[in-house]
Image (cartoon, rainbow, N blue to C red; front, side, top):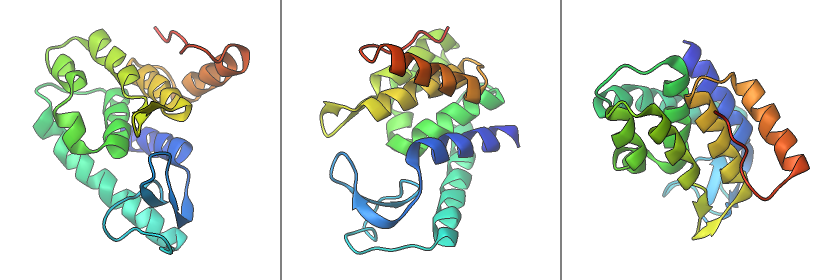
Length: 167
């Protein structure tokens, strides 16, 4: 599945994998590939296999849920971007988002632009989230993920004050 490879690469790139729990930028205890929940707290330690298994379970859950949320077919890139987004913000947030509403209304450009609105954690703008959303947006619009990431990195190195245009 092409979308699964793309989504997994996006998640690995932006979540990273930390086997010892740590508080994320919003102060939420996190472990593995961005996993949170009642079982994740200070002192939680996972093996690499546990982190990969949890990521696979969540991706499978998102794969099954996405068709129930959308009223149209998704390209592999759209699926990957939506799954990466939902992996980060949660399925409930995607389900109630303007992003999804616009996608279901066949407004791909409007939906893509909504990714950029989700760049906050704990009430503050987070550069890492903005970077992720710019890449997710570009992938959603059909860009090759590696090219999108390289362009974002080049832009950040040149001018860190605003997101790059991706289409």
